[in-house]
Every structure is written in structure tokens, then in C-alpha cells.
Amino acid sequence: MILANNKKAYFDYFVEDTIEAGIELVGSEVKSAKAGKVSIKEAFVRIINGEVFIMGMSIVPWQYGSVYNPEEKRVRKLLLNKKEIKKFHEKVTQKGYTIVPLNVHLSKGYVKVDIALGRGKKTYDKRESIAKKDQKRDMDRMLKVR
Image 1 (cartoon, rainbow, N blue to C red):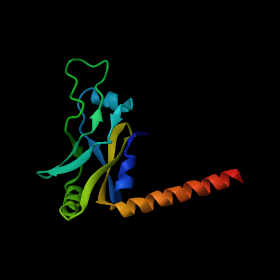
Image 2: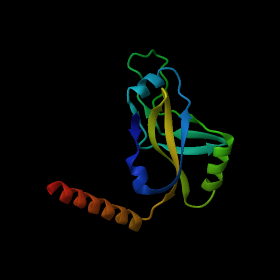
Image 3: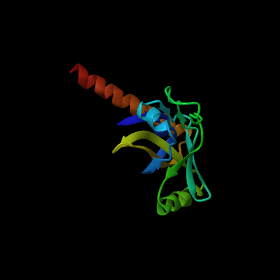
Image 4: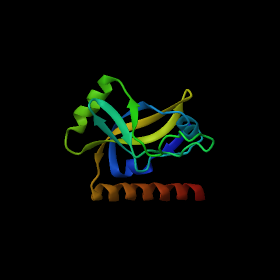
């Protein structure tokens, strides 16, 4: 079940390698995330000292929580194996690559995030993807009329 989706990721980046990671959540964040009060529109991923963190991810505080509700846009640690972190770190050090969150979803009751290795698109690449999307929309419209 998808809780949040980053539609701009596929428009702004060539997505090459994806991986599912767990998120280290605190207290009532889990309830709020399962209720779908998550946004990853401004989120990005950084590797700091061999650990992976997602920054800018917004989880609205649980309305029935106490005064100890965690901050909405705090930095959250992602749970990955050392081998996976090393593979992503090697690619990110190359020019033009970045790690992008694609979606937040539930997997066997746990809140997970799909992150991807992305290479930034140029403006002409974006125009090309818009043209392909328009062609597909026109084809679907034509098939629907028939």
C-alpha cells in the first residue's frame, strides 16, 4: 500500500537502480505514517559517515499524540546493509548522480521507502519525456473512443 509518491522523481531524473529501505521512526510517527500523512515532495537522501539519512520528509504529528510528538521535518535514518550503502556511495561520488526517494509504502506492516540512484535530466530530456507522455495520452484517448 503506497502512502506517498514522488512523481517528480521520474520527470527530473533517469532512475537507474532502486532499493527498498526501512525508516527509523519514533513513537507516534508510525501511526501518522500509516494514516497516510506523509509527504516526500521536497525530500532528498544523503550519505553521512557511512549512514544513510532522508531529509525534508514530512510526517504530520499524530493528532492524538502527547507533547512529546517528534518534529515534522526532522532528519530520519534509513536502514540499509553496508554493502548497499557502499554501492550507492560509490555511484553518488561520480558526477551527476544522486539518491532520490521514490515512494513510501507499507511492507508486511513496516513503513518502507524506495530510494533510487538517479542521474539528472537536462531540459531537452524533460521535453522528450513530456512528448512521450502526450503521445501515450493521445493513443489512450483514441483507443477509448473506439
